[in-house]
Amino acid sequence: MTTSPFDHPFLSDLLGDAEIATYFSADADVRAMLSFEAALARAEAVHGIIPAEAARRIREACAVLTPDIASLKAATAKDGVAIPDLVRQLRKAVGGEAAEHVHFGATSQDVIDTSLMLRLKSVTFLFGGRLHAIVSGMDALERQFGTNRLMGHTRMQAAIPIAAADRIAAWRVPLETYRDRLTEQVFPVQFGGAAGTLEKLGDEAAAVRSSLAQELGLSDEPQWQSQRARIADLANLYSLISGSLGKFGQDIALLAEAGGEIELAGGGASSAMAHKQNPVAAETLVALARFNATQLSAIHHALVHEQERSGAAWTLEWLVLPQMVMATAASLRLATELVGNIKRLGTS
Image 1: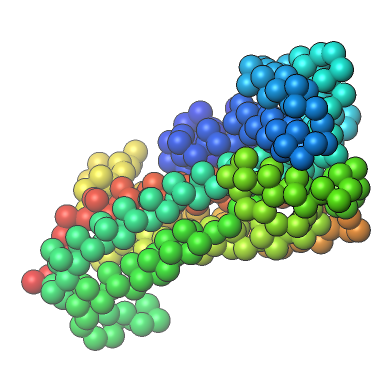
Image 2: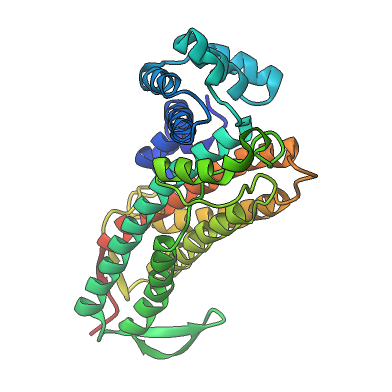
């Protein structure tokens, strides 16, 4: 039994997303963390901070190391983060004098936040592709059914007739905006050292950070370890996406309830009423939208980092952000399916 519906044995096919879940696996996180350590070693060698031979050995060890996850788990319970134990394991794998150059000038938050940025960059790219597919599907619906008539409703009451194209535009236009915003997102490296000052790197600090960002394919920005607006902005965008898809789902569910103006394939069965075809995907889009809207408040609470680093606010992000990503992923997956299941919209 799992406490999360996103990886639950039978709820996950409805509420989860197998593709996106891989980016939040322990393996994906560890691989991204080791990518940070390898890139850091190379960047520091380029600028003469550590010997080139040490950097080579560190990179080789990062490429093949399979950390002891049980050890990381036990260490995290004590230290609050996995990085001290991961660095210990990496230093053991590197061996010799080179081991002392592992993780030089960095701190746990640099590794963890940069791992998150690497993985969110990939996830956000995938989200953009899914939004494009949904928008394209709605374009196809408009070409096929746009001139059909629907009864417009205001405040849940019949208003005046509208074209199906009018309703489709209300679904599609926000998604086009979000698709464009996803392509504009910037994912910066986090590199600040013990208290955000990179004190061990002296005059080479900015140059090393720039090289590190380039190595990882991230943007070069000053440390942001206690400035979490970028996380809140991205979470807000995810909530906007799921919210607009929730509006789409709510409209489809209401159309299905009224009957006559929509024909859907792929409805869900009832255990008590064999004649029913429940609009499961549409209903789930509504639930996921409301879930993300609720979680966004917690992300805004996590903006409150005391002094140079907060353990409490940071941990709150870990609890909430992956769940929001998964809810958004499920929303995009279900909306793609739902668009494809609309066989008729409106009346000619």
